[in-house]
Amino acid sequence: MSALQAADQPNMRVPVLAELFTSEGCSSCPPADALLLKLDQMQPVAHARIIVLSEHVDYWNSLGWKDPFSSAQFTDRQEMYAHALQSEKYTPQMVIDGRWQVLGSDAKEVESAITRAAARPKSGVRIVTAKRDDHEAVISVAVDALQSGKKDVWIAIADDHDETSVRKGENAGRTLKHVSVVRSLSKAGTVTKAAAFEKTLRVPLNSPATDMRVVVFVAELAGPVVGLAMERLQ
Image 1: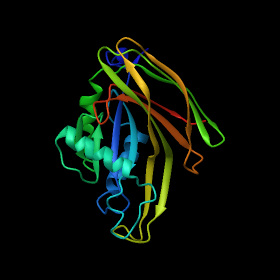
Image 2: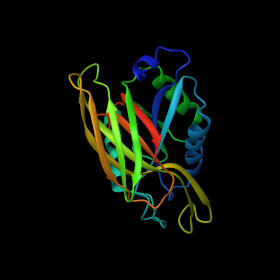
Image 3: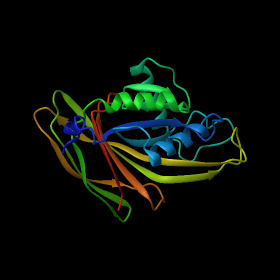
Image 4: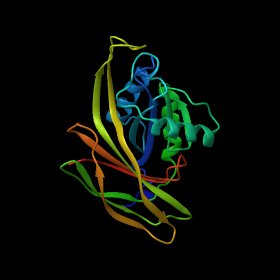
């Protein structure tokens, strides 16, 4: 059953993307990191299959602690969301399905946005295979043709979990736990109304983690997410 159909079935869960922009150098971020972990593990919103991504920005790195998971790519992505959603750029900020931004530690507002997102049907996205081959991930993806328009297909590869003992900065002395920490985010291709997308890709693995996950989502750059799926990297 495709995700588009699933939205109309009361017992089916519609996939919803929750992107947390966070930093180990931000003292306000650990509660949001903990909430993201809860969303991932507990799946507390009815009819939603919450797929989470933790994207660590780099603009806190000059304040005493360099976040080992940070990347300018995620700072740029957050800035594009801020422009598209007419919001400020801050941490912790959570973006739900590319449509709404909320304070990442505000459970009530986060769950309300997820509920709204779960009411929207999604295009079918399937990760057929996601296997490790030495220092690469071999990922086969199939995306249904869209109802209209054209969108990009994105692949995120994330550490399943990470833990850091922070020695400096605002969180000095704390042990921080993270879930689904994005280590690679790249565009795989394009899907349209006229043509579905099917492709097998090889993506370099730039993390020593043994437990990783693959998230595939369909969206314009920093735009609304219209389909997504997640699988563990085998």
